[in-house]
Length: 75
Image: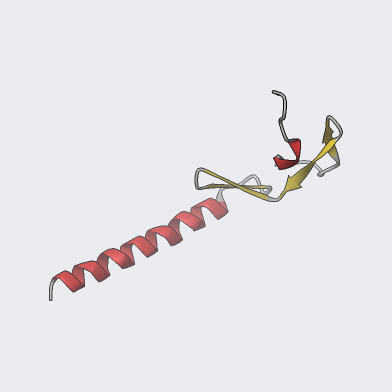
């Protein structure tokens, strides 16, 4: 790691095992239950259920908006 790197801004997501104290260069790194990267949800369950649910909800919102715009344009 380069000079000035701030370890406090990092988090660790574990898919298995128990979260324990993790320390690098006297800086403790926080464990998290969920992490979102590029709009993809990662969580400690190790499954993609939450990600699939999120995409279904987003698709429904998009479809509703599409149908609303279509009905407005038909007037």
